[in-house]
Image 1 (cartoon, rainbow, N blue to C red):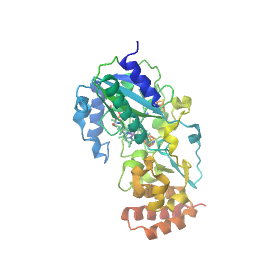
Image 2 (cartoon, rainbow, N blue to C red):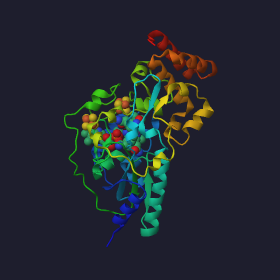
Image 3 (cartoon, rainbow, N blue to C red):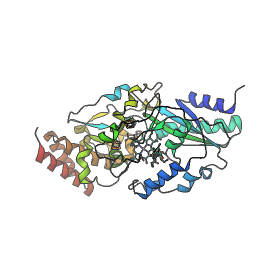
Image 4 (cartoon, rainbow, N blue to C red):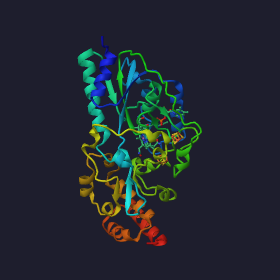
Length: 349
Ligand code: B12
Ligand code: SF4
Ligand code: SF4
């Protein structure tokens, strides 16, 4: 005879979630301690929303009264074709998660369906979250055995490596939790720590967002600190370096039934010339529906100037000067001037 747990997992799989694990609602204090440490050391940078709703993080019953279990969900987004990269200074690179449809939209839709399934079929209250709520997703995922947390702080699964999105469904029913029996670990490896250009990965398994290229190019609304600009290299949106070097990602399996790819930017390595010539309208047309909208036109063009400066390629001087002529934004102007000066000072092309 099937049970609520079996049916729920079947339903989640049929909606497209590859990984489905049950966690107990009570999180060991260790995870909260690490979270508080991260905040107290100001590693959240300007993401002040990370400081909010801490009470709900400690006590998830505030999100859904009588929460007893969580269904922790993993969604694979590994695509072999995205491995292609080039150092050619003509291109800027976008992180893998960001070149298709915004995962929040797709996963949120699936979670709403799971909520209705629980209520309608089993009269059980359920509430789904993907980033939006204060749920410590990686911690629950590790507890339930969906993967383990590596030194790069990524949740690494056995089948898909770290190329997965996480989400969770809070449930008022007590379900038998899965236990973590995975034997994969980092061991003595420290490839991610050594490869991180800005040394954002700290020895205590925390990321200092102030230095992380992902933060600097996505969440950050202000100028990029001058001393970090060169280290950003050609990353125009996000950064995958600490995952690219991880040996656990060598066994990642290609995503099937790729719902995320219903919207897809032509190329992950994007022409910098094209980007420098975008205006607000063409930016929207090119990136609408993708995570890139989070940086908005302003953030994306700031990043483009940094990448253009780092290219040291004279071919971008004309576009940068044109951009400087039309933009009134002081922050963008400063980044464009920085790029022009950097190219002039170092150009070998
Ligand atoms: C804020 C945030 C960021 C910040 C800070 C990242 C960070 N590592 O803290 C910035 C903007 C830098 C960022 C970047 C990225 N992010 Co982000 N981000 C988040 C968000 C919204 C909250 C994370 C958070 O609470 N950080 C605070 C720290 C303290 O928490 P934590 O890293 O989860 O750490 C917990 C565990 O690591 C554990 N822990 C801590 N220390 C130790 C030590 C040991 C020994 C152990 C075992 C455990 C342990 O306790 C901590 C607290 O529970 C989550 C969504 C969510 N709700 O979780 C997505 C999330 C973590 N991000 C995600 C992604 C995809 C990325 C990027 C890859 C995007 C990109 N390509 O540019 C990068 C990766 C950078 C990196 N190496 O982490 C995915 C990760 C999926 C996965 N497989 O892990 C998430 C889960 C979003 C999602 N819904 O899928 N992100
Ligand atoms: S995402 Fe990039 S900058 Fe951030 S920790 Fe990983 S390698 Fe470092
Ligand atoms: S690169 Fe090495 S140290 Fe870093 S997460 Fe992967 S296995 Fe762990």
